[in-house]
Length: 95
Image (cartoon, rainbow, N blue to C red):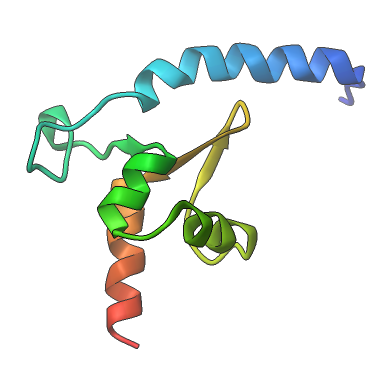
């Protein structure tokens, strides 16, 4: 079965999905903990990830552009999984 969508329909679908996902992605961990409530992974925004990595926003955006660091784009907003960033750091420290 094949579906064809107009560009504006795809944009509306993406916005609806993002609207439902953003509240889940906006969960912030308790201070000093690497996981959210219940031990699950959580997502950081760009400034929070820069602070966590102690790197500039330009550096992080360059890594995203190179697809050198794990990231997600939800409704055009960059999000970074804490667990995946920790894995990235671990593999970089072993090289």
